[in-house]
Picture 1 (tube, rainbow, N blue to C red):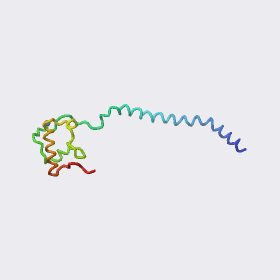
Picture 2: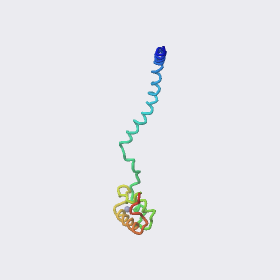
Picture 3: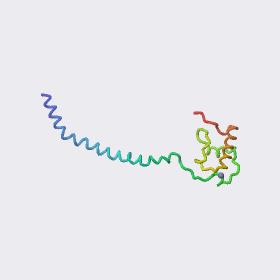
Length: 119
Ligand SMILES: [Zn+2]
């Protein structure tokens, strides 16, 4: 007896069932749309490092000798871990990059800058 009632219940529920999945499917469609848009911008992959203007800072400001005591200036050319940022990223010209490396190494030696941050 109870089985018949359950069968009737499932039969009556059956017509309602197709309507229920339709709503999630419609909701999933807009959610997949932004995902599809993301990979299209992804393969570019060049936005990882923000681009600075490729002009030598020392040339524009006419700084001939890089001041090794100017920590705030030097820290702009030192990465978080204490590494000297390569010229291709900072846009510093060759001559100034050489002077800059010397200045950074001098500053490290007198403990103004870290050789490597410990973490
Ligand atoms: Zn320069």
